[in-house]
Image 1 (cartoon, rainbow, N blue to C red):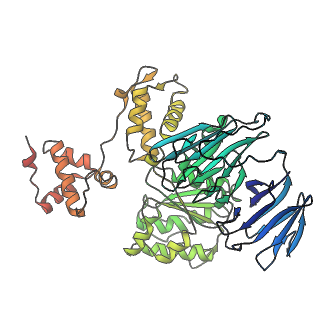
Image 2 (image 1 turned 120 degrees about the vertical axis):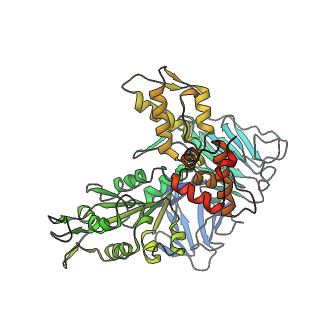
Image 3 (image 1 turned 180 degrees about the vertical axis):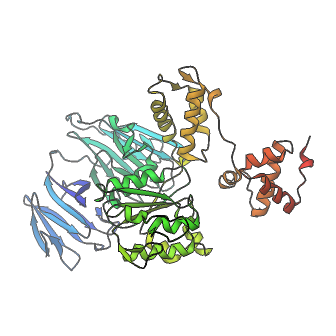
Length: 537
């Protein structure tokens, strides 16, 4: 039997068995295979099985590209390629020979002829609302839908009562849509029937079901120093793989402590510049007066203390990569000079009239919203668009709950490898998973490090965990004190009052809890006319 394999950039996306009399292909959802590519007509072509041959009939009126040429009709065989915009469909022989099962009616039980056991044991995982889904593919047929009679029940109003079915045939698992209202998609392609491979994603209504092998399901991804097993990080890893080999600038965004520098290092390692240096600069750690010299270098005598000429970091990163962390803190006048250097590939040392050609790729990172900084007039719009060619956003740790126990164990193993293995007890791990982690992975590592030092037992308990009190920014970000209708001023007043009440009016302790300098807290108390004595019991 033949099958149609959809590929993109040389990678298989999804495979369709060509077992019926005809298969309709196009962009419209009513087709048997719906391809999400604007270059594809709504009704592109029809594949017809006739007299032992597979025939292609164009329905677009413009011809369908087969073997590099537009065709109105064509006879297809093993190895033929059909081009649909950015997608390529390849005809190839499948190992399966039996006919597909018929549609299941509600309440019926289907009996299939015996066939070989699958080579891989697959598992379906996902989330429907707050409910975790995990079902091993066993037996012959599993049904999926909103009706309680299904094997996999999805309580979603966009899922039909009996939406689709998963069935096994000669060693492979398939998904078949059962005339659902919103259709079934595999890796973004609407399908009537398709073969499933590990790593595939089945979209049923608003629910994404992931296909994995049992051996891979819990295996964490170690990706160039980044460790994760949470689905939220899969798009990040895929984007790094696609973006890193290009020469375009990349903007890495995310809260402090999420691992933006690690992402930058992964991008450099996967680029064509990996054999050259990666030079990092924290724009928030260098004073404005020294930043220009740090970036572009200076000549001898350019300013007081410049006793020798010095190359800047853009020169040091020639043919390599320059990582600018916290680029949102860069002064406006330096932003203009950086923009010119990025666009022209030319720099000028401080105190020199000579231009120097540099070939440096820029990776930038920020925990701020640069779009907001542009609106506030604190960041140049032209530089923003120049560095934000590709944006990689790292989700905060609280949005990656699977990574909390994984990273905690990973850090603990690293820290105790030489001093004697330790592990977290159940109660300690529960506390780690309940905590919101405003400092993200960096804070988790510090908490684990303290716990490893403080515990003199092989099992770390909750008494060994120390969490930093949330700062004012943390509380506002996590909406702990915000109520509908409150202004930012009211939120700040409420937060300060809570801190003073918690510390019995002690200004120094309240300032520390809020993450403020005591002098700043005093100014706010005067501005908002708050008397600390009112909070002394």
